[in-house]
Each structure stands twice: as C-alpha cells, then as structure tokens.
Amino acid sequence: MTLSLRRLAQNTVARWWLVGLLFMVINIVILDWLKMGLGLSLTWATVLSAEFCTLTRYAVNDTWVFGNPRPTWKRCWDYHLANFSSFFLWSFIIVVLGNKLGWDHRLAAVAATVVSVGWSMVTNFLWVWRRPSSSQGE
Image (cartoon, rainbow, N blue to C red; front, top):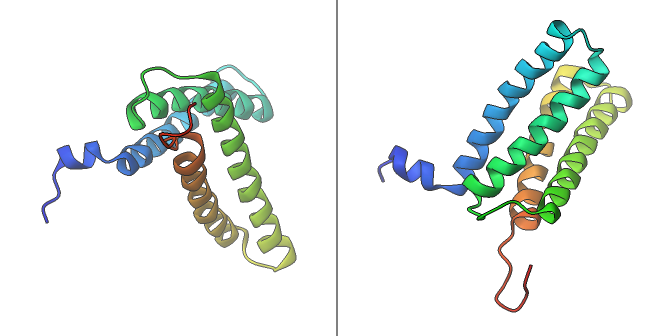
C-alpha cells in the first residue's frame, strides 16, 4: 500500500483533519490580533475569533471536504450545534476529571480533547454531513 498526497487529498477524513488543524492555527492568530492588536477583552476576542472560524470552517468543510455545491443555513445551524456540543463535552470532562476526580488539569484537557474531537467527528460525519438515503431528501 502506497500513500500518495493525491489519495490523501481525496480522503474526506484527511481533509476534515487538515481543515481542523489549519483553523486551530488561524483561530489563535485571530484571537491574538483581536486581544493584543485591537485591545478587546479576552472574552470578546474569544467569542469573535471562534465565531469567525466556525463560519469559515463550516464553508470550507461544506464545500471542499464534503463536496456540497453551496452551503445551506440548515447545515450551518447543525454545525453550530455540533460545535457547541463538542465544546460543552470538552468543558464538562475537564471539570469532572479535574475537580471531581483530582486529575491534573493538563491531563484532563488532553483526555477531554480526545473525547470532544471524537464526538466532533461523529456529529460532523454522521449528522451534519451525512449522505441522505435515496428515500429521504434534504
């Protein structure tokens, strides 16, 4: 089995990961610019950078990763809900592992990230961008 860049670029999961990692970096850059460059509070900088990246990442995922001809409001809303559920799960796991079970916060964050990214894959692939069966339309 040979691994080629062309085959990797055609793989939906690989593209999804590439987009996610790219937007992680973009989010940090925008967050820093909003906080340090524009002097916004960390709260507002976080909310604005997260929303900008969520919307643009949705458009990239919808068209490039999952091959839809154009984004829809329904998939955008579903994607927002999926992102929020992943964030909630990540936060909940850190609190439970850190505060309730006494884990180190860094280890709790790693465990929470693994679970929330897994959940994000499930919601993205099996809900937001699932391929409808021939008997159901979108």
